[in-house]
Image (cartoon, rainbow, N blue to C red; front, side):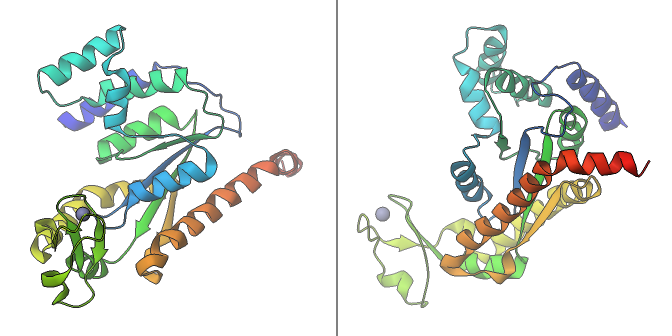
Length: 264
Ligand SMILES: [Zn+2]
């Protein structure tokens, strides 16, 4: 009940912003990439960003962007950080709309690490669907495969180098090729920890995916087909195909809207 009241308030609040763009069909894209721990949503977001020259923002990068801002919103951000308070969704959306207003986003924008909750997904849909074409990519890999890959991961505790464990005895002998430190399995990669993370992920994120699917925003990328070094390039290829198809749809719009009128 309290949540519903808050959502209504948030939506009313967000609705009062005028963001760039209009309700025409050539709206900029708002792309979000959702994937369980181990699927690398941020890696994919960065590669798509580079390929299509679309900026990537995260809630943390938005905070950084306004941390030294002299405006009142910058002051609010500093106070939140100083008091070690949680960044409220309403402030986050205000940062977002300020950012959108000052940047030229012809093609669009990638937002990573958001939405984190169903409440945020509803607010994003209500506030931004008129200004943006929302695209949500879901990197779908079965939990079993993620756990298998996760427990085989070796990380250098010095420089962060990551590789896969090929044989069990490798953990004892492998040294980091970059800095010669010993490679270790991270605690987070242990099976129980991974299972816990995946359970938390599904509880929080599955309702968001269901909602985005109902709204027609969801594009599921089947990552089960791709393993090892092929995973990232193949996922990027599949995501690009969706984006290219969307762009093509757009280029045919004048004709299709003409057909729409004819059928009336
Ligand atoms: Zn290293």
